[in-house]
Image (tube, rainbow, N blue to C red):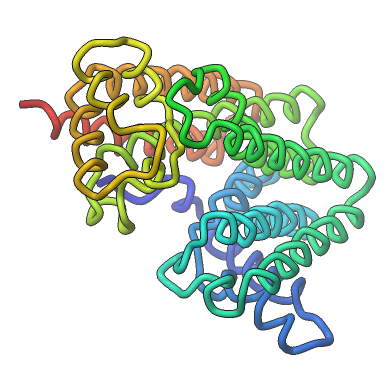
Length: 336
């Protein structure tokens, strides 16, 4: 739907992300070969490494656009990615998922107990790495893990709840998604020697970007096709997670809300899911949700003003525009 993220075009990013990959694999190596295999499963499956890329991008704005970032930045980026991966292991158990990143999920391949313990192991290794970077980074990562849990619990409390409020939704995504982007950017700033003002600005950038990212992701799950997403669409509805466009359709009332209330509040059949998605797409709330995402992303762009000018800052701003491209193009395609 959109071109390559401009952040990945920075001269130093490919080599630095290669360092992240090497360090990731080394960080989960255990004395027990089986634990190493399970803990490495999703690392080996690949991924966009978006959070490490943001940590590196922020650091590069302070150091140099063309030179490799310090090893402390790489370690900080790895600690964030390990937290993300550990949360995916746990998410797949809760969702009873059978695949992740086009490969068999850990829980499907080895069982729930193994997946939970391996996820815990990844979180422990993340904490160990963060501790080596100092008390500030260690405390920050610990708080972020807590926020992830809080956000996920808030979501679980409203599963299959048609009366989920917009406030509850925003609090949930702030914890389960945006907090980790904020932490990635903050660690990148701390480990590269940014000023206090720049550290706080990088954190604000990551938080606002993460909010926009999750709203966009939720819009695409409702509106894009399986082919466009590269995975089954409508996953949130199947899981009983009602996101911003759905919440707003229900709040607005009218025929679309009536269609949704007739089906929501319980597991959906395939036909019901198709009808619900069609009702949401035909409403004005997809566009209103895109507008809300744009608001957060405008905040993210504004926060970048405190970072040193250069290619890295421009690439971070480009990443914001890149994120907006997909729903904007999708909305245009939905117009009659």
